[in-house]
Length: 101
Image (tube, rainbow, N blue to C red; front, side):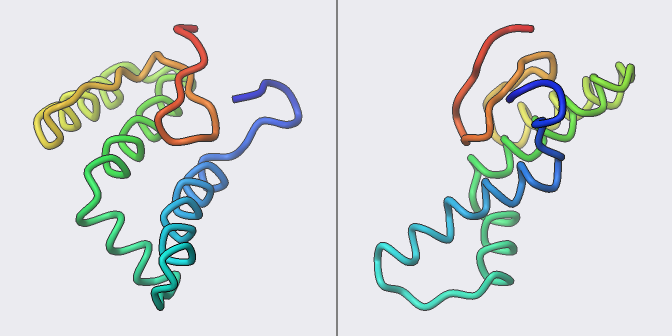
């Protein structure tokens, strides 16, 4: 993720994550709708769920909150059996970690 005026909003990041799932439908030639992609991703795609929880917890951490991000990290661990700590900085792509700061 970039810093300064080019920083993406949380909504833009989530939209870019959903766009990647939309691209899979396009590449397979399958019909889809934005609503279907959103709900399918939110309810059934573990990777999207983990990244979504990470993104929300990281934004809360950036704003000085400690316990809500920590709780979301634990929720992610419990629900996805994987851990993405809120203090990581992540790029706009799903599954890419820029650095620890």
